[in-house]
Length: 307
Ligand SMILES: [Zn+2]
Image 1 (cartoon, protein in one colour):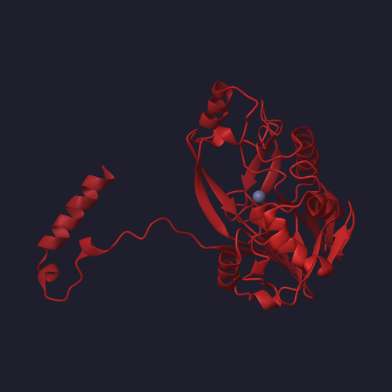
Image 2 (tube, rainbow, N blue to C red):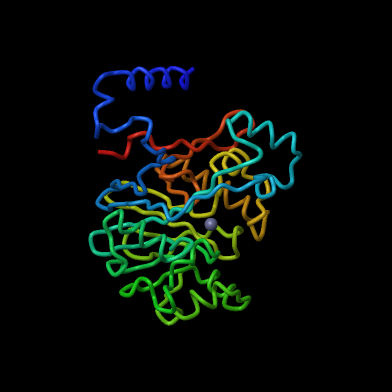
């Protein structure tokens, strides 16, 4: 119906006298621009300014090849249908977070590659040389991919912070991404354990499972809080409603599920906002206790953080 009425609108516009004048733009010639939205989102948590930046987004086929690998296709289809999700295609998002504490500019994770991440940073008004601390929540390729640009450090003035257990695991296990992006910067890294601070007001919390040393980070400023939960949960429904569904990318599936229940439970109980690296952009929301069979529910921010 929309198409029909738009066509008839265009037809009547074309028939109007002005539309026939030389040089008048033809309405039908405007090219479709494709889906779009702002690539950054900024808000305050106490005295901290937090900006999420979209480093990339891509569709992937066959989501049950990733989420709910241990449940029947019927169960996956039912939960998906209840939440208006396709079982054939899912959209993935990759969202680093910038925190301006007033004395440090902290970047959490570096995206898939330096080019996309620095472009997203620029759109948000920051240059790579302003970043003073880069925090790596864990060392999968979509989080460490932006550390180096053609063999040099992308964030020239930054020091680096990551979990001790995470670094130790990959330093021993090795992989191409680690060797290319992390190893050259190891001298400038400091390593955290559970409950240790990146800087005043930013505390690391062990959330092992997705990777052996995966950590999440809690911000606390002037009585306000927020948790950057990285890959603790990789989908707003398949991970939050069903934290025990196995995820292909979780190295230790049992530990990952236990971490999800633990940290999501804490965020829900504290009623503080959260940022999830793979939540739909702008990746900011709240975590509620679920109802029925759902363990938790992702509640996208709806203006609460705008003032
Ligand atoms: Zn990831």
